[in-house]
Amino acid sequence: MGKIKGIYAATLSVLNEDLSLNIEKTILHAENIINQGCHGVAFFGSTGQAQLIPVSEKINLLNSISNNKNKDKFIIGTGLNSLVENINLMKVSISLGFKKFLIMPPAYYKYRDKEVISFYTKIVEEVPDAEIILYNFEKLSGYKFSINCVEELAKKFPKQIIGVKDSSYNLFENLKIDNFSVLPGSENKLLKGLKLGCDGIITATCNITATLTRKVFDDFAKNKEQTVNEKLCKIRTVFDGYNLISAIHTLMAQVDKSYNNILPPLSLLNNKDCQKLIEDLKKIDFNYKN
Image (cartoon, rainbow, N blue to C red; front, side):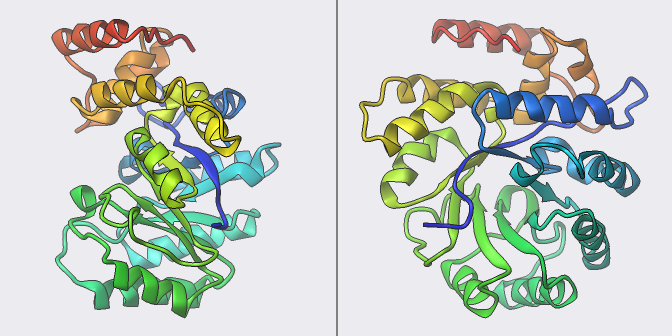
């Protein structure tokens, strides 16, 4: 069993009209999806537009959630390429009582396992109190973790490298490390992952499917018949036809116009795709209501 277990949403960042971070609404959104069933949320993952949000705004949010009643349920993504900026943001987070981090290797540059191990080694040496979830998403970073790389990092730093979010899906079926969390990045992989010994998921679409996803998780834990997993997977499959951030913001904006605000170069779905998204969800009897 891993150190982190359950259903986690890669929570959205809610923006003001001037595209600055709306801290109050971002926190409220996270609290709402926890109340709907998520065991916790990851702030500033890729779904939270982390690579586009200024460090100063991230720090302002960290200060605001430092005394939140759900504090122990929060994972902090860094969303930064720079080694030094990763370390600096983590040190601020540690000073505010946050220890769990979701960290992706830097994008753009080409490198292999040896360099990735060096990157995380330097982070751990500078922030030894951190507990790090590796973020495996080749589509965004250009690098895909190998099983050997993860095993070496977990062996080298068993107290600091505590899990992996697998959004490339090359790890979750075969990676087996004691006291290490394996968390696929899609509801389509949830039930299969649980059967294989995974610990849950960290996923974008839990922003709108928290209740259904939690039921699948709980029913598996209680060895009960699965009654909603098929519907949950169909919902995720619909969203996989679009840019996830664009589709989720577009759908949620039908209820709350705050979600219309999104940082370029990201954008909402066009009217045609928006209508198709809504129609496809209705076909599987899913009507989003916040």
